[in-house]
Image: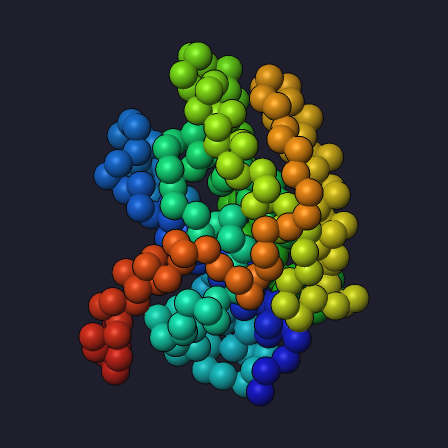
Amino acid sequence: MASPIADYLLALADDELILGHRASEWCGHAPILEEDIAFANLALDEIGHARLWLELAAKEMGEDPAKYPDQQVYFRAPDDFRNSQLVELPNGDWAFTMLRQYMFDAFETQRLDALSAVNHSGMAEVAASIRNEELYHLRHTQAWVRRLALGTEESAARSQAALNALWPYAQQLAQPLPGESQDVPSSSDIFDAWRNMVVPFIEERVLIIPEVSGFIGDRTQHSDHLAPMIADMQEVARVEPEAIW
């Protein structure tokens, strides 16, 4: 049986899963070998965090935590995913990927801080367990954003182009998640804390925050980029739906 908390947890998992999949696409293509290894591990972290949220959602719904995550990942239609459009966008160049990852990591660390204090032991425990890894992600991507924005003329231009493209999508993070209630932190409040964190950091890198108004859709709407990505992700599992991996 569905519940608001389960819907909320599913949205958290979808953000992690889709961003982790996008990060995994850099495996073998990152600009330096050390980063190829580091970013592949970061992708695995994100996907692992998605699994933790999905296992918790399974318990909320009375489903089998051993089976539910794979069912949700590999056998849902793209329209049923509740991730933000920010995380489903194609990777673009390295500046785009690093800035997108930084924006999301900054928001997620704020959310995890708040979730660690909620009156729901399972949610608080998962949030606390993954927070340190996300802090590492944040430090890692922060360093890359700084390096690229203050690097060469070309890297600075690419950083500004990435910011111009991503900033409108980042505003969607302020919207309530499915199932969001007074029992969980307000996305709007977290977004305010996020802005207070990222705007000074970005502006200190001599990048210009673009002016935007309103949101780009919501979590029931997706760009044309999600369905092909989901099809690739689900291809093998759908060939052998009864297989045990």
